[in-house]
Amino acid sequence: MRGYAVRWIAVALVAAVASSFSTPVASAAKGKKTPKAEAGEAEGPPTLASTVEGMEKVEGFLDFYRSREKLYLELPADRVGRPMGFAATYVTGAGDFVMRGSLAEDQLVTWIRLGEHLVLEKTNVDFRAEPGSPMAPIVEQAFPDSPVFKAELMELAPLDDRTPAPLLIDAGSLFAPDLTVLFPDSAGLSAGAEDGTLVSLRSFPDNAVARVAYRFRSQGAGDGGDASGFERFLRPGRLADERSVEVVVDYHFFRLPEDDFRPRFADERIGGFVHPYK
Image (cartoon, one colour):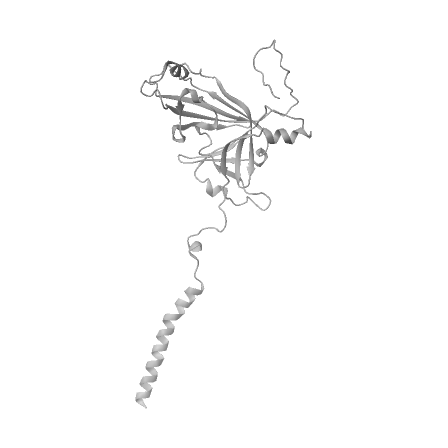
């Protein structure tokens, strides 16, 4: 009897010990959180606030978020599909090639949404037809606008139940050297994305201004002085080093006036400053 009693006590102790080890594990497994929950990560897309956290906000006609490494653009929904003014001016000259203060470009641009992308297009105003006329769709398709920048929309959470997600894009390459034509091909100069520096960025209620400094370098013949006289004539002169030149440009995006302004018909006695179209 004593042997059976000892054996029964031993079995009971083993069962009790096993129960003491298994209960906490079972409880922990039942209430265990997923790695995402343990890390404190929110479900769904990030918010605008978390995406631009720590960045400087440049608020106005266009809203920018800027840091040392990144540049974001938040486009108001009412700017999509509405033409705005665009101009590029030379802040500095380029030897004897162009004078400071000269206008490099002045035209209409429009931000459009294509799927999950925002595209900046230069509007073709050289060919027109009366809206609603049979020729209007033909002219629109035959003489399309020119896209000069495209960026994918960042996936963001809606602001609330009634407000959709903000339209935010990475604008790091918006002010690349090919945004406008600063030098013709005959000048023999080129610049890459790494050759541009965003000097300043300001936004006001009716316009936004970005100042960018570019370093253009000579390409092809002429680097070693083997260019012909005509080729040298087409390129900037009076430079410290003809192989490179720095040009500072101001880009202007501005609201179009909402009034009944009508341009005056061209008159050959007036002279320049005409905008002809067909």
